[in-house]
Amino acid sequence: MGTPLEDSGFSVLGVTEERQPTRALVKVSLKYNPGKNKAGVPPFKGWVVYDPDHSWRLVEYSVDWNTVSRHAKFNYTPAGDEQESIRSISVDIETTRPSGKVKTTGVFEISFDPVPDDVFTLSHYGFREPAGFGRKTVPWYIWFGVAGILCIVAAIAFRWLRVKSQPKQPAGSG
View 1 (cartoon, rainbow, N blue to C red):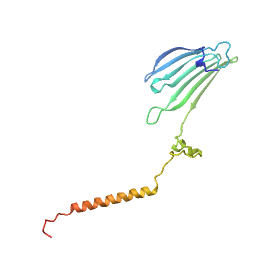
View 2: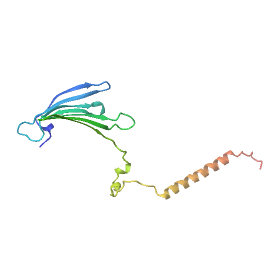
View 3: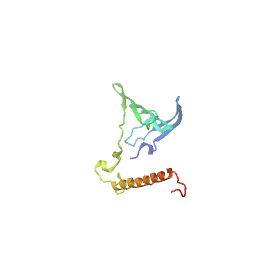
């Protein structure tokens, strides 16, 4: 069984621009009617709002099934020094039952902890790093050699400065 998007019963009713004070969004209205002989996803009608200025991220959606209506808004962190990420999702669900309508509202707060760099290595999970990967350290003798060469260069530079700063003695006065 495929997804509703692959089904012939799925259709896009329209695409419109939705203007807000600080940005323009895109609203896609859609409908799905799987037909009488198909089980699985029930028929629905609704819309989805995307933000084209932020990689077409989901901003809001509303879907109506026979007895359930669901509406959600996605809130993101403001643009700043860090990468934008989702901060919360507000969901309203209204269910029609024989005894009446039941409305449920919820807010899902989402937070992210910083991820240390070593989590992205195999050794963090107890595996050996492949040849040529992982942290490479410079052997101590290389550092010792570099320090020795720098000392020799400094000695030559100081000798040259000392010879250059001495006054020249006239020829034949010695």
